[in-house]
Length: 269
Image 1 (cartoon, rainbow, N blue to C red):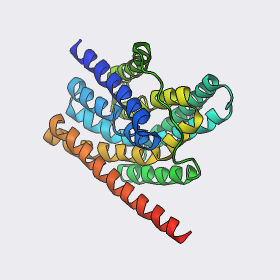
Image 2: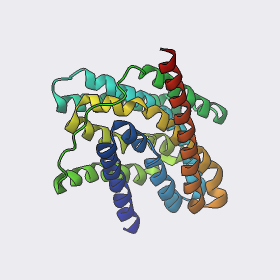
Image 3: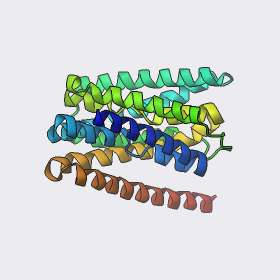
Image 4: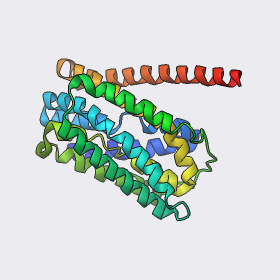
């Protein structure tokens, strides 16, 4: 019962916090917050507590393969939502269904192929670069006027996240580390965030949010790689902050390089 309560508190808190960051600081910062390790951390902790550290470590590495399936997911949401631009609710539904279908297909393909450990991380890097290139023409920002926060609104945000996280972490003993790692790649917290932003602010805000999402998604791979290397040796208390530190260093370095490239391009123009 204690673990169940913590799953609800952590997952709900993450979605509420990330949505609030996007509303307060804008789509770009909100996207980086949304793409920080969330379900990966929750899964690592609860798998470690419920299934053991070796299970958690193996699942963390295989979650990198699951992250590979999130690149088709985010492309699917943007493409699906664009099919029904005038009806916001239908646009969100089509985007979510398209995204989930592509994630499922990609996960099944990756699970069937079972790429070697030497291939998984480079594959994630290639997919990240390809998705960033595909999204290069999306807007960098969009107007965003905060909606009034209410208790029912917070309850909906919290409920969507909590149910998803509880479901995915609860079936781990049935799926095993391989499929648990793949399934927990599903952007269970990111989807509610972008769907809520889409509902309240429109598709342009979502496009601005997802433009740099691939960069953050690869950061989750960095987190999982560090977790895989450290959790059985150092335990959860050390592995989680070390993974976050590695992800922060990666994001800061990538963002610095990106800013320099943009400045050079502006100067050249």
